[in-house]
Length: 91
Image 1 (cartoon, helix red, strand yellow):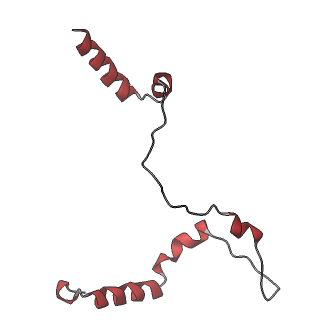
Image 2 (image 1 turned 180 degrees about the vertical axis):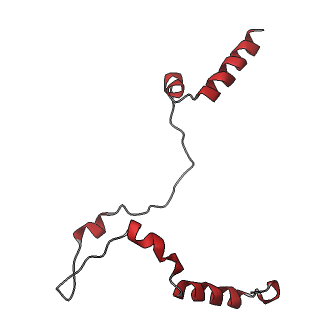
Image 3 (image 1 turned 120 degrees about the vertical axis):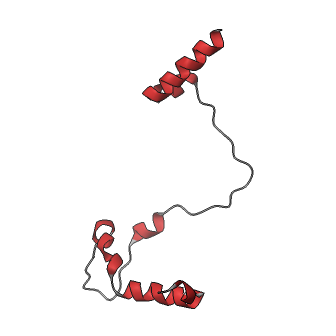
């Protein structure tokens, strides 16, 4: 496909052509499973157990985090930066 023929219709057509070639199916077995059935229809109660989306009302509120909590997640790189800053602030 050349750059001159990149209309939205051409892009959508190329998408569906690629989709029909089944090239993206390599990830499907790792993320799903085939469930066979001997009935005409199935009812899975757990499908309705997913939490519902809610409208976000108000601003974001950050939770307070203690200094000890931050230190628990400190990496060696953060430690070096913190020590350098403390040394600089002592002067």
